[in-house]
Image (cartoon, rainbow, N blue to C red; front, top):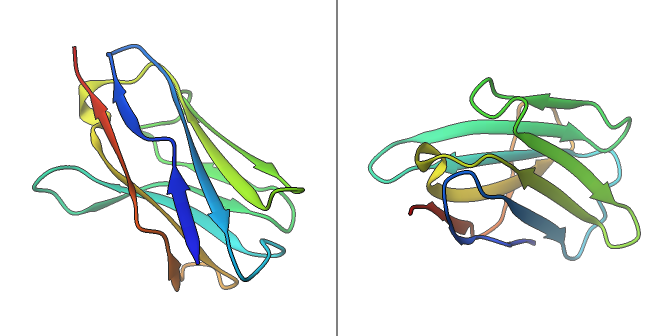
Length: 116
């Protein structure tokens, strides 16, 4: 019900814009959370965006480098990542839920690899 896209191979210092699109439901009054999983590590929270009022929260690891935005017409959420570092290499997932702190709907993930 969620589809991520936009991942790929990028050089350190580069940028990527990840997309999270909903199918079969709309993003009204949902918490949309980005998490990532680096190779051999657990899930790491990246950002949460509340579609009800646009409140956005970022992990310290991406604060100042990550920007979340929403295209209401396309029911798509974007995570713009700038100044990418090798430690940003991970599979990025978006998850959605109408309740704060829950993530009942997940996408399949998109791979981001930062390497020279």
